[in-house]
Every structure is written in C-alpha cells, then in structure tokens.
Length: 261
Image 1 (cartoon, one colour):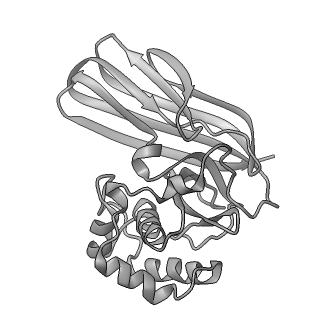
Image 2: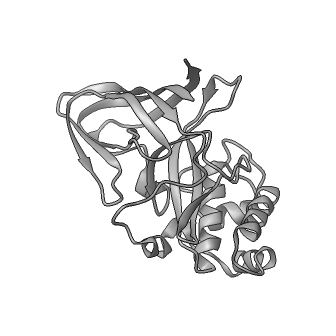
C-alpha cells in the first residue's frame, strides 16, 4: 500500500527572530515495515543531515536572517509492507536501553498497582489487556494535554491523546521490566484527510518488537509509517530548537495521509 504524506508546520512570532537552530526529525527510513520512494523536507536556512543515537534521521537547520514566520514542509511517498506484523529492528541498539527511566515515563505507585492488576504475567495477551484498560481509563480527549504532560499527569488527569497513552503504557511496561519504546510517525485512516502526526508504543518480547497503538487499539503496524523511535516524546520530537528573540511563538500544523496508486 502506497501512501502520500504532506506535513506542514507553520510558526509565527510576535517579534522578529534574529536567528535560530531547528532540530527536525520528520524523515522516515526504509526498513522491513516500509519503503520510502521519495521524501523531502523543506525548511529555510542551511541544513545538515545526520543520524542520532537511535539511528533516526536528524536534520539540523540554521537560520541566520531575521524572520517573523517560518514554515517547515515534509512530503513524500511511502509504501507499507502489509505482511509485516512486528516493529522495526534497531540494529546495534540493546533493548535494555529502553528500560531507562525518563521524566515523562515515571511510574507512580498508583500506576504500578494498575499495571499489576491487568498484567498478572508478562505476555502479549496481558499487555493487550493493559493497553485496552489504559484507553478505558484515559479516554482520547484532544487539546487537554500538551507535550509537557508526563505519564503520571495524564494518568491522574484521566484524559489525553496518543502521546499520553504511549507514555503511560511505556511507563508501566518499564516498571514491569519490559523494554518499551516510543515511536513517532503517521497513521493512515481511510476516508480521513486531515490528521495529526501520530505516536504509539512498542515492547520487546520473545526477541521481537510488538506494536501497541493504544489510542486506536491496533497491534500490528499495518497502517503506520515509522519516522523516529526513542525512549519518550522528547527523543523523537518532530521539531525542537533554540532562537534568539521572537517574542511569543504560535504554531499550527496540518498532516495529510492519502492512499495513492
């Protein structure tokens, strides 16, 4: 299945930005799950392409001319392997790396009790049960949390989006001693044009990575385009950066994921 992606992120500032550096993770790689036929990221300034510690493609863009608006565009065509049932392999990365604690995936005592209640034994069936229970406990409610919201915040708030579901699931898995990672990318939903970039979790069981898309209750990556993997959102954030001046920043984003022949 070939998918065409158009991702535009627009920034505007109340005052002029003198200079900035943007770190952009919006470029997928070809792997067992997908073949990238074409991909391009358009951003003002001078750009350098590197790979980060998780083998994600990392674009560093420096803008040295003053500006008050900036648009970053990522576009391309990716073909999914519909026969793939597992998450992508991370060559050279020890799965134990994804047991490391992070501020966004702290598991509180209440969360630990929740995890034990739904996972009496570590296996795929009980982890699916945990994923289902998290969605019931934390219904999908947009615009009520932010990238700053931690797993514990979302758990006690009892509402959130895919980022929050992923953080909560990862926090509980790591507490149970299961390597769990955060994945950013895109989700194809038929008859839907305007989407947001997506996030889901994966766990390492029986020497393979398994997909757990809690927000959509999908457990195979047959509709998912992988862009970046990490321990939490901050390892895979599509755009992070620093700037000199600029006042108040406003951001809007639009994503289109369409099937193409």
